[in-house]
Length: 270
Image (cartoon, rainbow, N blue to C red; front, top):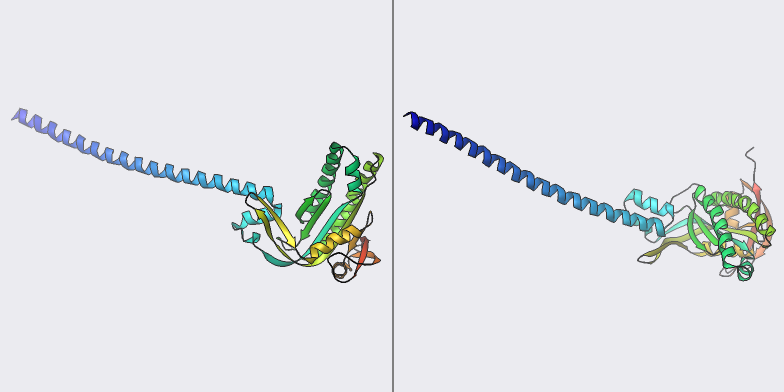
């Protein structure tokens, strides 16, 4: 009876241990499955984050910062779809650049363009302009898209005045090196169709319409140091700037002659 009782105690203890072992085995299996699920979720999350980083990299590389940032903050690429909006367009370039580039070493041309783009690029971002394109010495910026602003034409004119001041010292430096260059600006105001153009891996954000064409043509007519604006720009800014009429121009792509005005300065706040 003592041996039987001892064996019974051992059997009961073994049964308890076996039951605990099974429970722990089940717990470990459950934990293992949970860990596997967590690993799978983590892998999916990492893959999604890598994909998003690659997407953001493409956006920031090929689109203006304002456009890329707006897409990132909204989580949608709706802003890239074609849409129509009233904008101010500014086009600027260097007078005499073609002759300079044809008669200078490529290294000198690249150095000059780097200084020029750096100077005006910082100003464009300071004023909230969207850099629409760089084309050699030609630069176009737009205002009121994709980020709205209350007075886009005035913002463009104020930026042009700062650009003219910033480029002045560079002009003196370039002339001291024997480069006869000038700087001109054209500004227009009107409706345009905006959105992305291009192909997978290389997109640009563009403004298509007469307003872009007018800004470019006014820039072509501007003499060194002039900021030529269209009548619509004058109407939107005449309370804040002083101008000098320069007559009418027959602009390519525009059916009727257009009056233009040279911006002299901003009016005093007083």
